[in-house]
Image (cartoon, rainbow, N blue to C red; front, side, top):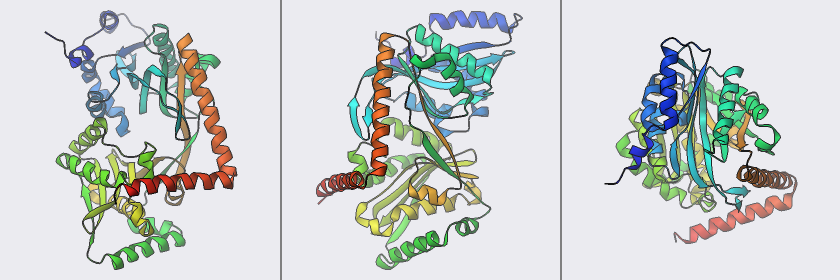
Length: 421
């Protein structure tokens, strides 16, 4: 009789059994100032639920979302959750997973290298609890030990700020050979919401308010009585939401570049998990009963997190993306859905600079095993990051290259539109 994948994922390793025995002695009287444990099966994670829920403030690191998406995520091997204990209780946690997949190392949107790797991926917002320097150093040493044991070739952190204690500890522990180089830094913008939607509108520039009202009026005039926004909230609406959004996404040049919304199983499962907790916010604008723009986000704790946004380019003159964005912001003032922050995430697009009043810089962190495979990966990725950095700087300074990029986007758009004629 065969063994199921879930049974394998939930089976303790010999190393974990040894730790459990040692940790049991620690709790019953052999006192140490700290202890570090790595959880490597899904079944063990339930024991962390109370502490995990208490400390987590990012939907990407939510325990239910983590477990649900792990079971249907391509390339998922097992959990890799590092916990620092003090006095027998969790004090700090780093939430990650071990994956086996191909890295798409890109310059712009063009993949240059696609090496297959065993990667430790640590989720956004997954460094929680007491994130002190001492705890960060313990975690960095544990990561290095995992590499020395041959568990992975590389590790990736999706977003760390420059002043992160974990970033500093990892760079000190891994040194020049074990750290990635030329890593991109991103602008992360969000909106601290005022007391009312009216106050928010007043905080915008006069030009922005005028443009919003102008597009709103123009749409109402050209589609009188034929426009509405539907808000998807429930778990049983996720499939319909995905179908409606897919009709729009399939027409955008972002789809041709392999970015934006997708109907991957782990994306849909994440939306269902969020809906079960009452946090799904999926707004779709309809014109003549056809979807033309969408904005999908998650309300978690006191923050709205934006994830996916897009519009049908056929209706671009109405700025439908702006209208659903404003609708989503307005909903954050509903007493039943009140949020204190509206987080639009990575990227320094013009609309984010217009709407957001807070920002910080953060970026990924890449670590590598000091082995032939790890050093080769470091060389490939660092080289790709350097080429991408140079290309972006040239693009920002060259009007010719900007025109070339726009022409390429227009060509992709026309090619996609021809498929729907």
